[in-house]
Length: 345
Image 1 (cartoon, rainbow, N blue to C red):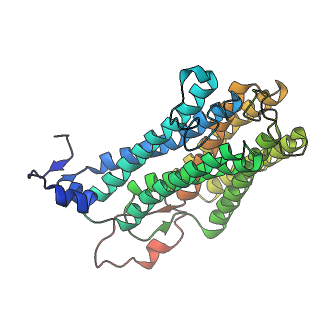
Image 2: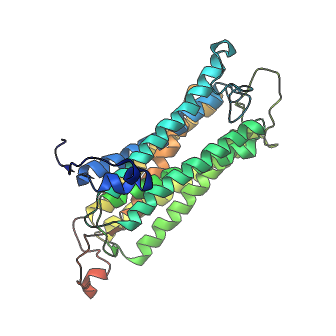
Image 3: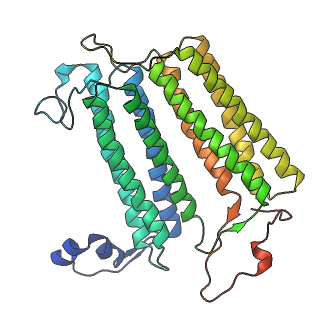
């Protein structure tokens, strides 16, 4: 028995398991809060890993390494080694989807089994990850069926960003209570944070257009000419860089505002972390541009985009706190007022 977990032994009955397997597990195993947080974090990590491997598929021109979907080639689910390195890269990415499903499933089980008290909102978030994974898997198949249509591929990445969003929210909620959120900063600061989040979202959308117009179509066998977005990728890349500087400027402005109002250290730390990630991502972006988009740097830049989005969400979430709910307790008015004078998150 693992430390921090409780097990209630009994002889399992197959009909009970078949009717409601999650309830069956929950009745016999109670994970510790640490175990639940780790399960949610594992799902978040895998949601980023699948983006990196998906990027590797594109930059290595392996997007049609499996020319059909849901099978790989004709009636073969996995294909054969004779299909070459592009097939190996593509099928490896497809198989990692099952690993992602397993980690999300583990998070769902862990949240469901933590019964005291029941956390329905957290349970719904955990299940939301699963449905986004399913939707993105089907959409990934559509990218193959449309022969890597750039608009379809771009939306495939945006669905991955949606999965990361839900995964971050789930992980955050495992570290909080279920009381109503209490703001830690004033409304103008929260609005600035919302503006930063909107700008970061637009930055990611424009980044997908750069990829759709750029020199990495995802397939290079010569058997099929992959469509590209009909614009000069350098023009879109310049717009992408402009938005990146807007995000950096908003981040710096937010940090100064938080310092000026003596905000809690939590939001200040999250903004500082985001700024450092943006600086690293900016260096990668400019290096890849001036070196004509080498494959390794393009994939690294996609990883950086995930970190930027996670950092942005963590900034926004740091503006409030959720203490454990107390049955029958009322929240005093002072607790719901902006807590700019607090010194800790």
